[in-house]
Image (cartoon, rainbow, N blue to C red; front, side, top):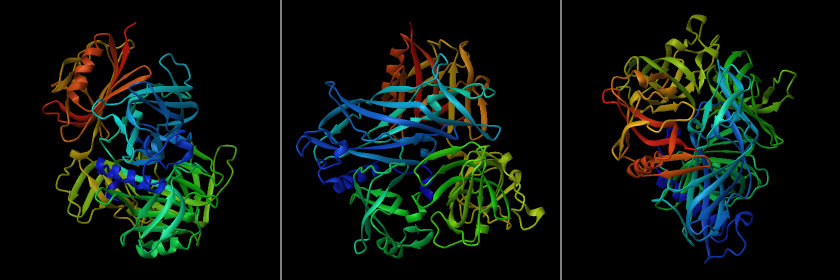
Length: 621
């Protein structure tokens, strides 16, 4: 569960590459036919694997079609590496890297890629006053966006080298905050201006929890492993290579709605037929090149042809009827839709309830207000207002790790109290906590939200500072405490978002000084626009009012991703000095239009320490 916070290291990703490769043929030449160019053999081609993820943005759903991805060598030779065209909700990949494909491509040094996105049928929703509201993607002139091609120039220090027997991994990170500027919230639909930023990393600077999904091929109980065909997203028939999943005595299982632990879970899986849906979440080790599952869902505990699935946050409960918002509905026919309105979830005496990573069945009382859930059952057709009811009376509900963010009001050993701003990105004001307490006077109060923290270290938490807590809401009707915390992230670890926009036409002088040690933002620039803030948790800092100018300084503890974006192209640097030099050269003939960065701000010095800066430039006509 701890890995829901971004704490995986980049090298761990590489271990899966050889593992998947072994399942596809063992040497990098025996991969999936649909993604293997004609003429590839063991001496002329090597393995390349693609993962998709997303940097956080202010969207409830951001669903687009990823049409293609091609890679290009320095000599101009190109190869297509995406054998399918998945429809992807990037807002669901913030804490997760999803394996998309395994491909065999000609050996050589690849220096550039091109990704094609199709916004023709995009589903984009933003939060307005606590409710989803449709958005429309437009270009700088306000015209609707359809097909978008973006060239991605790889970091000079980290080109993609493909060789026989040496599989490589490339992660594509679609930065929603940098790529989109939300317009007038009073309009319907809301205009969102697109300037796409896709950060490609051969060795990702940040890595996350890894998910590998697909139908079961076989089980080896003696070895403690099982093998699947990799099948991401909602691809019904795609076969994108194989992976062997290792399990341990600590692996937590949920199969057909029933929790298991360790070898008992693997034995149950062994009795399932080939083709049973599975989803494994786990870690990789480089020493023996194995993927070890921390938890596994299988059978009807995964979206399938048997049951419809609903994911969202419980905003109210009355008896066995629950109101759920921010709903993604996956029907058994394979269709997926984000529901703009609330959905209703009904429970029954036979509803099975489990907890993500838990080992026992729970009662339906475990589902309370604020809890994020994934429910399986029979979904109704949409009524005239778009409302849907999912009947889980003969189905199941899984409690998912829930994220609570707020300001600390008190912190004592074993107990933390927050003034909550949001539950999983939904503002606290939309939740009705009636019935959550052991009595009416004990109902949860989001302004004084009591969290049991056990032995977690709260020493760095002080009143008035932001914090995030990961865990589960206390069962309905039994608060206080209101929440059972499993992980606490203090103020010093909460990253902030720096966002600046300049007036139409941009500026040639966004920085008062710039060199390899830092970029000082000119907050007095007359061309600075309405966007000039540091969003730290839920506190917005206007940088034009600060006594000390903000200086972007590189985070030297990890490889960075510093990106220059121009129309139809992004160029990536891992070295801050090279980025600063290239940026100075570009600004001689281009204007800066916008900048985003994530990192940590020191108000005393003005330093904004970052490993990620993305700046948009517009060439001078």
